[in-house]
Length: 142
Image 1: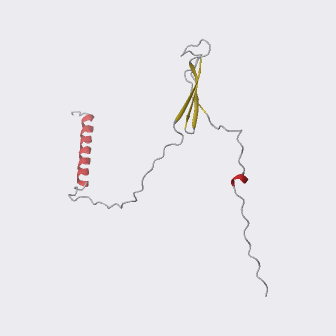
Image 2: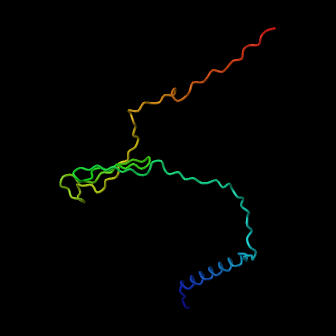
Image 3: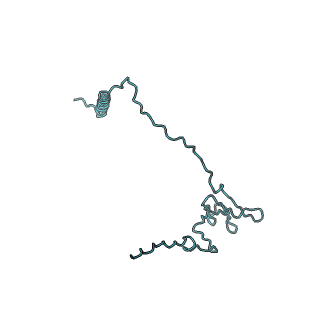
């Protein structure tokens, strides 16, 4: 009895399954119609002009501090976001990449900063006093 390889059996089975799927897709899809698609009428809206206002912050503000020709600190203010960046200066005689020096120094974000010298607003300053309602006089007795 001659032995046949299992590879040929699986290959034949796979080809037959693929062919049957292709035939099923071909018969299931309807033929495209020759009529043009129906179009919907879109109502015209108002032609109000569009105005674009520039941002109020005016852009990014960068402030640098220098000592002896070297930049020691950079403060960046962009909109409501504030952060400070400082250079990575290794301590002592440590070389960049040493175990004693750090490789990365991330920016320090300024959060929850309060102005303590500012006068607080009270509720009485913001809300005007209500005016008393006019009361009608009682009717005269006859």
